[in-house]
Length: 120
Image (cartoon, rainbow, N blue to C red; front, side):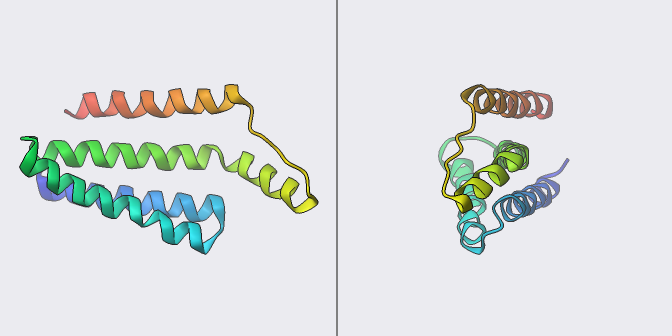
């Protein structure tokens, strides 16, 4: 893919991340704050291109895959977010089991690493 196509992929990954945050949290403030990640990521892509000697395409691949894997993580934890919200409305607390958090983390990092290595 060309660099221009990777910018489109990065934009699509950013939109999927924003949609995942909005879908999971159902909170306008969370959705507004989630805009920070893609903006900082785009700035980082441009910064790494000039200062660290990476090509712009490599930085875009890493950014796109990282944001997409984060969006998948947010979608995966949505059922637990519903439990947290329901229990909070009744005054109780719900804590996600540690094994589930660790499993999600391993799967997301594994997905991102494998895809980045396949693309680069």
